[in-house]
Length: 605
Ligand code: GLA
Image 1 (cartoon, protein in one colour):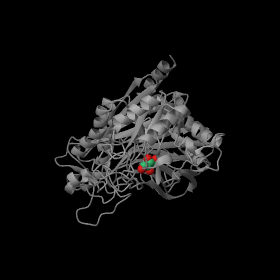
Image 2: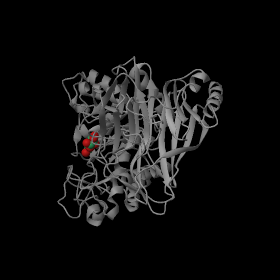
Image 3: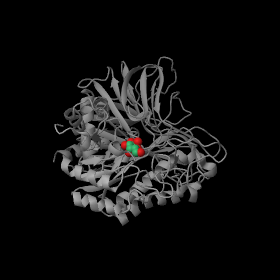
Image 4: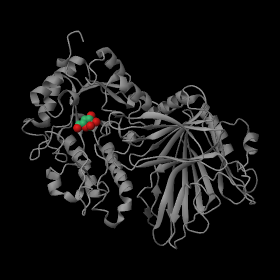
């Protein structure tokens, strides 16, 4: 019953109108209040973001503006506008920028209405409608508060009714403001085999940006999450901390800007780099979700709240069990045959895991996948290696008494493939320049609906022909290179966004047809690790680096944001000098598996 009374209070507060002009909107969890107020002008400002306020009078007494800078002699005090466009009195980074049909680059949004609904027990959605007073353009802000988990997620929808398309050049998911004596940012950066390495810095006047332009293997160098210490450095169990993450599997951007009076704004969203968006009349542009929690007890509490939230509300099969497994990548690479795999399946049984997972190297006939130079795109079992195809492997798995899972990388193509011979126009590649190959491959153009059908078809065909496949390891080893979509032609500025939307379209189709098939999100190690992807994948692969010493740090850092059941970890021979016990302990901290042959081990081990 607790949530019912909380909700009643919340409704009361949310519709509170303090005087004829002012609207007050409270987005609340059990521990946090985010409070917006309208100004006499009708514009909407962040009035408070912090510990839950206990009394209505506390809320009433908050001003809609925060401070008036000494240098500002205007009559209107500068406030923290919830979704500022460009061209008004705020001279710092906006959330939103648009070019109207008449060339005007300004946009000023006014509060129109809002609604509060409890969409499920303990989950409250607040929808705020803003509109420009001079152009037929609307912005709708969505806030979902997870009351018990102390997590809020927010996103934005933009639409207009001008005659021709408007051009969006900034389109944040969220903007938040802080006033603190000091700000300390903890960010995570890395590369293949050294994912999510953390570093700390103090933020001073000016901007700090964390972003990526990689397109598909998007988080290879910068990770879509951060922690922000307010007033003190980020610590495990004390201090105010904002922990935030964006649910977008493509280019993202976080902007942290400290302004002239020492206030900080945090702007989160898609990276608009090379992505001016031409929005058609009546089309809805929806931004990804920015997910965050404010902790008064350091990052330890923030991570636990995010874990509880993810398991209860976001992660695919959040409450379900996972399949422990034996993978063959470290043990065999692409060099295997049927007999060898059947042997590993028996070892899987002996190890006591649920499943055998066949990795890269099982496909391609005209262009056999003997290494990473050929075959991507041709998802047919290689007859020379596997004369009995996937059905033969499934039969061996059954005989051994384990389930069967398989590796795919369906968004990619090698130029050495039958797919590329047939459909060179499906690859993202420049028509008029030398081609640059990353891992000898190209990215398929998922902005093209035919390519979306093809990628869905890869999964659909495998599962139709082999309904006993229990699991996919879905890899993505290349960033978008040679950035040109033959499909989008003169609309190249839509590629980064439509490509990712195309991937979600495929994942939604897979999810609705095969809701019970588990999938691991992998991207050359851990370059895909976001909460939109994790609606479709029950786990991700944090790193190819399985040296238990390095892995401890990598897993610890990802676990700041993701629950351990969403992170796969395998016992391998990356560091054979580490005891098998230590390697196993580290892998057992996450979703457990092996990628090792029993033949490599001593009887003692
Ligand atoms: C990526 C993955 C590895 C393995 C190889 C196969 O690098 O991260 O785990 O699957 O691809 O090519």
